[in-house]
Image (cartoon, rainbow, N blue to C red):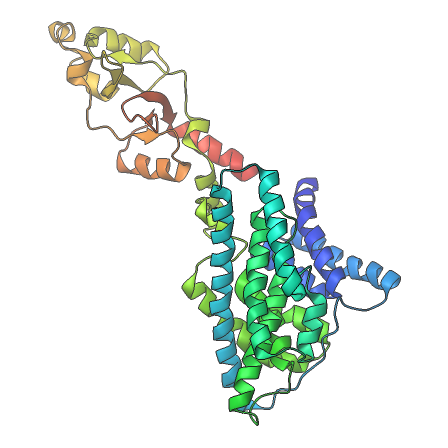
Length: 424
């Protein structure tokens, strides 16, 4: 039991942190489950998460009082006729969430490609953020004070749009240049500003069909978080617990789910999984497939294999097969390149013909049409290659030189490695 609890500790820490900061224990549990554990429900981990999400705000409230980071007032939805506006609002949030992710990683890649020392990049990034802060101090820091202002409708439509753009830019430069920070608080800021900008524009056109100022900013906090992290329950419950009013659940549900669908339709990954996806790590394919993709051929192949020169007589090869521990042997040319493989099945045809055994060479009898792996392939690829050709061993060649053999992968070794990974 110690191992699952030990693995659950970092996840439980995240749950407790979110729960304490926003005075939202259920949102803390949802955050850990949807974002950190990616929806994988395991009782040992989930139990630790629930305890942490419950204890953290209890301790925080005992010391600071039962106050969230910023106060969000409740807003009433006018009625069913306002639902289309929240659906449209969710669509806008989904598009902006994709822009946020693309700009964030685009700037990060741009700064990473600049050939400068890391401390120089950090200084340059801080300088750029300082310039932005001179003209737009609202984008500095976590932005919670500015969110409170937005919830009360104190900004103009133009300023809302400017703040959205520069908050995305400032966050991207900060993290891309090596500065400290995260993407959670900026998501709340962008969602609130987008909500007020949307409300300002729509209210001018339909003054009697939209809620009072601040309603869409409130919904935007949870809905944009849901869209950018692909975690709808986290966004919904965070907003409900911060407002303490279940009336907000209807508009935030519509906006969150619409934003999520639009975001996923335009971009498969969330802001948390985008980087891993670019590295070839797919977190949504299941535990078994993840194991197969994580184990590399180079880590389980046999490096102490025996090769056969193509000019070697079959008489010698048959002795090697009988006395050796391999099932098949790679046949190597004088240049060192692989010419094929030879196995007991190949030798059987001439075993009873003594005169042939001294005349025919390994190169003449070897199977040239060989299924190969390279050392950077994963176990999933290896399993597919084994299914193509029913053989017990496959030669492994170098990734940069497909003629140079560097190992042999045995079917039984591959199965044993998979079982060890599952047990761990």
